[in-house]
Length: 114
Ligand SMILES: [Zn+2]
Image 1 (cartoon, helix red, strand yellow):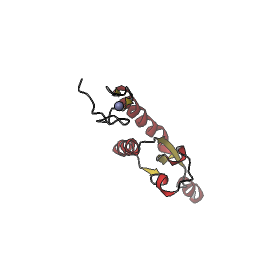
Image 2 (cartoon, rainbow, N blue to C red):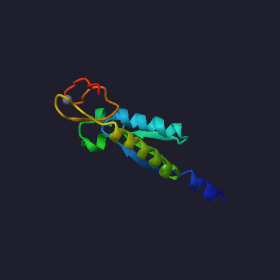
Image 3 (tube, rainbow, N blue to C red):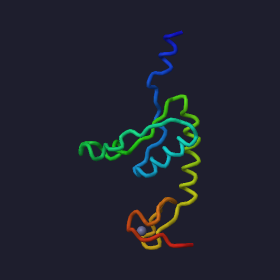
Image 4 (cartoon, rainbow, N blue to C red):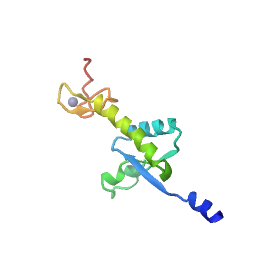
């Protein structure tokens, strides 16, 4: 039984979310923790650590223990739905912006009030 217990605490982590916008990854982390799921961000400082990493490799990643994966993915699903439903287009450059942005990520135009 001791062996089984040890195995259960092995580092069986799953990546549940990654995004080039570190702010969104932090958001997801907070939301997951609010749901009682411990999680951690990896790769957070990767982009500054070395110039040799590819762009995708340097995205911050959110990891949970594998037995929390399904619950964490549920939380992420609702988060992504929020992002999509609140998306807005810039009135200057027509770029799509996520709901959490107060100004356009591309041209910094302020978000117009609807
Ligand atoms: Zn714009």
